[in-house]
Length: 453
Figure (cartoon, rainbow, N blue to C red):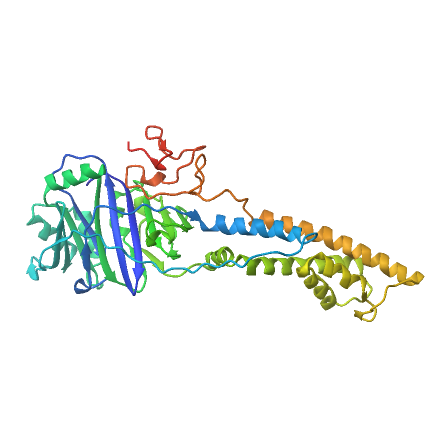
């Protein structure tokens, strides 16, 4: 068993097909070969191998932070309506669909279809000293016996884990280092210690294999998944408390995969991987709302202003006009007038006849009318106080003070994340004040990565 220090995966989903790339970081070993077996939830004739030795870096701003910055602006803008005209520009973004960029340079052998010890090899690929095959098998032990013919020994525990996939319309991706000198040459050129492989297969839900990693027992192997788009992972008991899901945006991506993506970080012990990870290709409702706030700020600003104004008018009106029979819809109407700034609101209150529930069209001058004017003045003051309090409540609940885009932040790049295929993959959030890198690694502020151990 090789000692894994982390797994990094990229999942892209287009037209009913999943493009899965997995890179495994391992401790430095002198072995001249290595083997890994990955179950794939598709029949072998529908699976294609895509070998490459790199996964692009991911940079972006966290979605909820960016939406919070918009709401912070809404709160300040709403307070401005108390003395300034409403000035706003519509803002919209056109979401572009993710486009998968294939890595070229594959050396493709013709697919071999033959039976050997209960195993059928359907496809073979080789690149930079790594050979990969798509196989189907009658049992986990059949895979074990097949690998023995290649001089490779699969642990019995691993064969038992693979048994759970046999007969469930699964195929298996078997990868191994076939030419160690070529592999080492490429590995040193990349300055990486990793084993990477990709596969393409049809599926209704996005998939990432976890159960095979359970063979490592209580050892924690940090897993970072980068999924294009906004998705909803189905977290089960063993990993739900040890999994962090964040959503990111990138307005200036290096490639289309980075424009909008989900980061799933699993730090649970391997023994808790009692199932594989299935992912719905849809955004949670909270994420959809945050994205709408970010891309449609004018619409949401008006919605926030309308809602806060109506609530403030209801609260102030029910306090000031308690027992006076003022209708709630009248108070809502006056709150709605504040959407046009405080001036229309004040004029509506001053010229409204609260007894007859209509515009009076005249200034009240009699003694009794002066009492009504004082009550109206108290209502206006109460409305303004409550309105301001509510805007601060909105700011405290959902607002985030703008910190700038990660591209412009040099000294505190807290919004920037990277997918770094090094021994520090689990520490991919790089911050100046509290560096997540191990003490012996250190944080490189130019690359925003943890330095290799």
